[in-house]
Length: 381
Image (cartoon, rainbow, N blue to C red; front, side, top):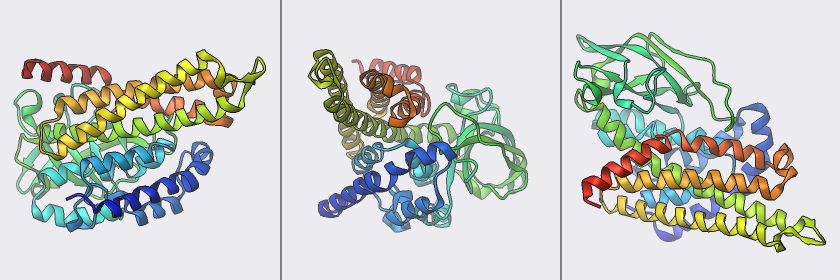
């Protein structure tokens, strides 16, 4: 159920002010420290941001997909690391449980996920497994009432803070995704170890690390769905996550466009503000048009998903277009700012680096192209 319109408008207004007044002034600090201040995390918990997509029955806000996308757009107007700190709780780290969990599993974990008491992660990628996600090598071997889990997961968002991992592991000998199952794996089980956070191009403050499972005994009761259903669960989770990321891309683009307009209106060359030069206007026009198109696609697809329609193709198209779009907008922003866009003081070069990741995670642009083509052919046009 959607929130009452007045309640939702209040939520949006609160988040908008939180982003502009609290988060944006901290962007440089987060970049330098590669960490988000603990007090800010507490404020995010108090706002309910860790439980946006979790039902009110389990302590969350229970937003629809359309509402969640509108919130994600607002959160996109600051460094993506802030959203990433709770993004796994809202999306890929919790949605497998929401979609396929038993009542007992949901009661055990979802209230603490929604409150932010625990952080979740989604463990699919491996050293030799990326886009070919059905080829996971991590194995889970049944041993009485436990599965013995062995393998390494790579580039796992929030792994350094996570208390619960949704892990994809091979339980059968069938090739591809048919042999993959999903498991809820608490961090405190024997044999779980976390690597050092990776040094990254951008999105400082959002940590990723390896997670190693060494003969970890996972209770059979922690399996999500039946054996062999893990790949299907993962794909459903990613369909939803792609829409969320698309909305974030729109928010970042809108932030960049607003910054460009403000700078171009003040910066003077040849005796007038550069905003009056037509080639600058052309870059602003291209950026605005693409951002509007991406926003329309994201919100339309979110509404269709809420209506129960199959949006696999549309979600892939939204993610493909929005992530590529924000890369172009960021590139134009550096150009409009000129030398100022290349140095750290204005934050444009930081966002230029930050948005590059959007074309890679939740499925690369090339994987989105394959999904779009496959679904188009399947639908006959």
